[in-house]
Structure formats: structure tokens, C-alpha cells
Image 1 (cartoon, rainbow, N blue to C red):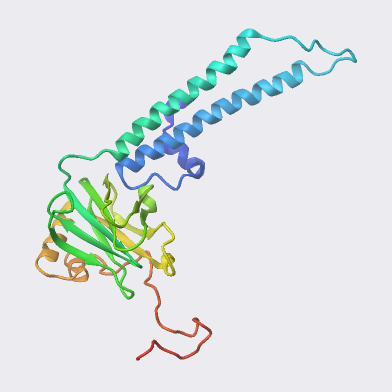
Image 2 (cartoon, one colour):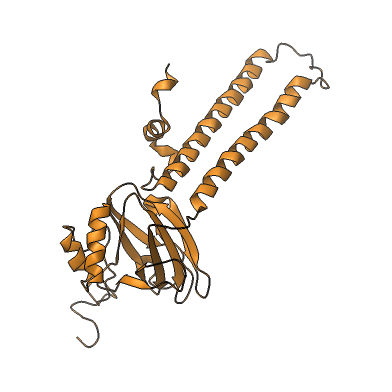
Length: 281
């Protein structure tokens, strides 16, 4: 009766998710979170059982005299238990890990949205595509700059495919709330994955692969909106509106709120120079 009132999510929240960042904002992230919490619970159960045996042995078989105990005695059932139990535990964990991993890597034949992620030193470009693969056409695009953080606007409840490519070196596409990241390679390699978002909000995105001098400032913002707002946003982009104008059209803050752009000016806090500006200004 006590356990029936618990849930994996509630149990994880009560203990700070046991080191896992959060439950995430996608269906795939939820499954990874549930696997993590269930694995921790299983580990705690095994740990408590082993600790109990240790303390039982300490108390039950503590020294009662100077006579040395028999050194060749063994317990066959216990030996079998110690061998079979770990194998069963590993097999169960492997089974559920394989299921979750397969689901996270699964690609649908007809995703609802296709976004081409183009990384370059040290910014991002997000191209909304009309199909799958490198031969598809870009119908709208958003590109970041030193002054404006790029916004990646996506809807909830739809299958979204990301196709990643880099213009120079290896980068890494990472939104912490997705509980997932994947490298972005240059050349003909296009890393592909899909997510289904289920929570509206604004989430910081980062490059998670050391890619050069300004790697730490290579950021973007994921903006998750309702399908109706997304359709309105994309229609505005297709008609020639800027990202900021399209964001305003759906009643959203036009600029990033989770992070700030790289300061490229020579301010007083940079290079110990005061009252200076960029060259040519």
C-alpha cells in the first residue's frame, strides 16, 4: 500500500533526481529519466540487501574466543546466489537500456518537422526544410550573430527531425533539458535524431564540443511553443519576416532570455583597457 502511492517521478524529485538534471522536456527524455531513477532504485535495493548481510555476518559470526574458525568451509547455495544474482541484474538493466536506447535513436518515415542544424565558428544556423536529406529545400532560416542569439522555435506534440552538419570543425548540439546531445560533424556526415517536445518554454542551447577560442559563447535558445503559434511563426518567416518580427507576431519576446551574446567590444572589463571601442568605431 505504501509503494502504490509512489511514482518514479515523485520518488526522483524527493531526492534531487539522484544526480540526473531533470525529467526533461521531450518524450525521449522522460524515458531516459525513468530508466535512470529505476536503475538507482534497483541499486539501492541491492545495496541495502548487501549491507544487511554484511552487518548480519558481523554480528552473527563475531569473535567468541581464541579458537581459529574453519578456513575451508563454504556454502554452495550462497555461492550460486552470489553468481546468478549479479548476472540477472545486469541482464535486466541491459534489456531496459536497449529498449530506451532504441526508442531514443528511432527515426520515423515522415517526421512532422525537419530542421537542418548548421554549426560554424562560433554560431548556429537553423534551416526549416520541406523534406528529409541534404537535397531538401530550405523554406525558412534563422542564423545567429555576435549581436543576436539565434532562436530555434519548435512546436509541442510533433515529431521533429534534426539533421546536423558543420562548416568547419566538430561541434556538438546540446539542450540540457533534452537530456541528449549529439556531435555535429563537417563534411558529408549528417548526424540525425528525432524528438517530440511536450512542454512549452525557453531553454538555453550550447555547443558541447571544444571547438576553438569562443566555444563557450556558441549558444542558442530553444523556444517551444504550441503548434498553432509555430504555424503562425513559420508562415511569417516564409513571408519574409525576420525572426524577431515573427516572434512578435505570436506574442513572444523577440530576443533570447536564457543567455546573452558574446561581447565583442573592447570594454573596460576586457584587456584591462578603459573607455575603448572596437577598431574602426
